[in-house]
Amino acid sequence: MTIVQIKNHLLHFPLRSPVGGSGVASVDVLISELLLASGVSGLGFSYVLGGSGKVAYASAELLAADIVNTKLDHPGATWRRMHATLNRSGQGPNNIAMAAIDVACWDAYSKERGEVLGVSLGGTAREIPVYGSGKYNATQSPGEAAEVTRMHAEAGFKAVKPRINGGRSAMAVLEAVRDAAPSGLELMCDANEKCTASQAQRLMGSARECGYLFVEEPLPSDDVAGYRAIARAFPRLTALGEHLQGVKGALPFLAEGFCSVIQPDLAMIGGLTPAVEVSRVAQAFGVEVSPHFLPGLFVHLGYACPNVTWLEDFPLLEPLFEGWSVAVGGKLTARDVAGHGLTLGEDVLERYKV
Image (cartoon, rainbow, N blue to C red):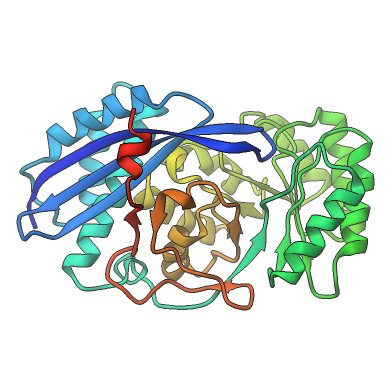
């Protein structure tokens, strides 16, 4: 398998309204289209939430020039080549660029082999539970959060994850969601790094009392000392990871037992290759994996890594692509097609290209 062409595109995708705990109103999306000498193509993508993707695009162009006319013996080997090319300029936008090309490599590699991507990643087909995360925001009243909870339960999701702030009002939201949840619906919550140290301690205690599986990102991702303190007081009650860059960035949180769930983000971690690696390291430490949104792509990670226990339904980039898997009974399986099964939607490049 020889890579003969890579075309990168930068899109600016405005959202209908701000979403999530950070109020993201637009996404810059990096698209990579890869072509093998055999004629097989691969589609990859990455993104910058609420910011400019121009630096990531420039990095992707540099990487494309370096790996065109090289063999795609295995996507992991190509990822290591890209990483070595950029090792003097840090992570950040470089990870975002590597992620897009890495996904394209895996898509082409699995298509060339005639395999579902999750099988090429080293896995086998299985159903993975999905939790409802969309429609929640940190400004909702307890009643509004409860209504979203009922909506997700009716849609068949196996769990829900409301968004909360660090104030006292968060306690009322936790209780309202708990009371609205039907029997068997698991509960999680996401603080989006909004708590102070004392607020985080209070929130963790309330979440444990209400029976929540985990509290996501009660503190900023770089507050290692803060997470160490939380882990001592509330062991195995924290989830984090969407802001961590690369496997080494995640290692302290895994090795010291700061979290029960790690949540790699495709762009921040640097692609599917390091997402698989961090998931396998997490398994060695007894930590579950629940990737940051994109369930229709990360279902393939779940095939390869048995400690992927949850996928997050948080619609964001889905309108740009066709071919997404649909959850049935609150569980997701990949479509039985070679590669990841996604294609760009009609006129997407024309409508959103920068």
